[in-house]
Image (tube, rainbow, N blue to C red):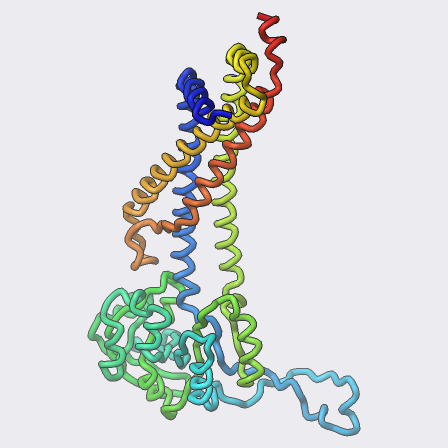
Length: 419
């Protein structure tokens, strides 16, 4: 078997039908281009949406939850404790939302090698006082530096500087929608009241915009010290411990472990955002399905072109076999033709796909709900390019395999006698 001779014959057959060859290569190029552009855009969109929700959510959240007592006094009775008791209108336990021994718990978490970092938090229901009107709100007291390090807090502060929460006493960063409703400008002082009647003036030092307008209508941020003063509690008062892990996939397992270890409620990110993750998975699945469909359609085009080429080149194939070429050699010739189309079209598709992705990345995307996003999101993950070229080669291989088998079985005597 002479590889150089087979290569030269393959090139001659390709150039003899160069228009059909070009059409097949364009089909592969277009398919790969759209595959890369579609997956890059959809993956970028998923990443953007993930950043809006998942990147702002603790992988594991530790907190106390007010709930009815699981054990009623009658269960302790020696006479009736073993019976099945029907008790209605059970009231929640009289306990605080504060996490006891929060400092010791955070020290234990920091020593856990699976934990990337922790951030304390205080969540408090408040009323924003506007004249005689009270608007419902939620204040989050945060450790500003830890919050920014673990959850990129600064990316969502659209006006002002996040560090002012730490440097300016009694300051607040309002949700943009809440600020618009109250007509509160940077530097203004607003009045905030807790359900227990504690009232405190807070200076507006920035606006926060999460991309979820309903959330931004009520949510605001202060430092932990300011939140503790507002609630009139001690400096050890914490209602939430946010835990970020090195591996997000072990969050459900660690949530169960921490629930038993610290006797606290533990909510993992998968449970908190299960519907959101399902949506991301379905969008990615649709993108792959559309891209692969395009490649399969291109493969059928190559199959038809090679079938026509074999039909038109019956004489040439008969002569090749009559002069000593085996069926395996003929098979290799047409597989070489198919793979040449696949590789050439695939490489061009990768180049054009990158170009289309870069163009999408430059298209302005301005919306009030996503202030930090300036252009359409695109993910330039090398995985997409590797999948694209591999699938291009595999598709064109099978598109050429069946016609090449047909060509390898041609009997030269029957063809020449028929002529």
